[in-house]
Structures are given as structure tokens and as C-alpha cells.
Image (cartoon, rainbow, N blue to C red; front, side, top):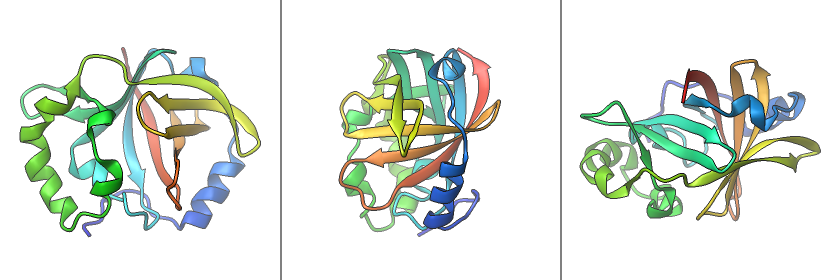
Length: 175
């Protein structure tokens, strides 16, 4: 598997770091694009998003969230409908980090959407009330904690997934 050039830490260290951080309020995230990058914890998804040209997320309003913003070949960014992505299957595909950059760009118009596909809510997770992005069509909640005013860590809480997937988001331009 090709590793990304993201931050690396063990899953135990990522959990400890996440738990040490304070909450972020949902309204602090709204109105912005947030650029993303994975945190390598030896998770099956490490590098997968980056290999598909994932850029980040857009939080336009509480019910207007685009969870998967990707870099396009011909346009700056576009939103992907997560309901159309076989996330669990993709984590087990051989050569996914090689095939992703080859297959995803020509197939991405079929998975793109202009409609929001998630919501941002305050949710208690691991003993703290903080912002969480709830996918509309997948059993996934991305739970956030504040690193600083412009950076959050996300814990992908995917029902049935044994190991959490971690990522960072960096506040970018207003929506």
C-alpha cells in the first residue's frame, strides 16, 4: 500500500490525542471550506482519500454539508455523493492506491452532486459535546475536536469498522 505524506501516529496515540482536545462548536465550522488530510495510523483507509484526489469538506449550513470535496481535472473542486462510493469494499481492493488515481477521475462525474449529503450537529462522543458531521446515506459520523482556531481533528466513526480513521481539517476560504 502506498503511504501518503501525512502525519503518522499509532491508533492508540491518535485516540489519546483526540481525547485530550477540547470541543469545537458547530457554528465555528459553518460557512467555510475545510481542506483535509489523513493521519496515518495503519488504518486500511490510510492514503485512500488522497489517492482519489480528496480535497476536504464544505460546511455551508447545518443541513447543507458536502462531506467529500475532490479536486477535479478541469474544474477546481466538486462534491462527491458518498452514497455512491463502496467505502468498505474499497478498503480491501488490491492496488487501490494505484487504481484510485486512474479510475476515480474519469468516473467522478457519475458520482458528483450539487446537493448536500450530510448535516452538522452537536453530538456527545467519548464524553464531550462537540461538532459532528452526520452522513445522510452512510452509517458514519465524523466527530471533531479543536486543535486550534483553524484546525480540527476528525474521528470517522463508521458503524462496524473496528479501527477509527483519523484526519485533520484546516479552515480555508469562506463558502
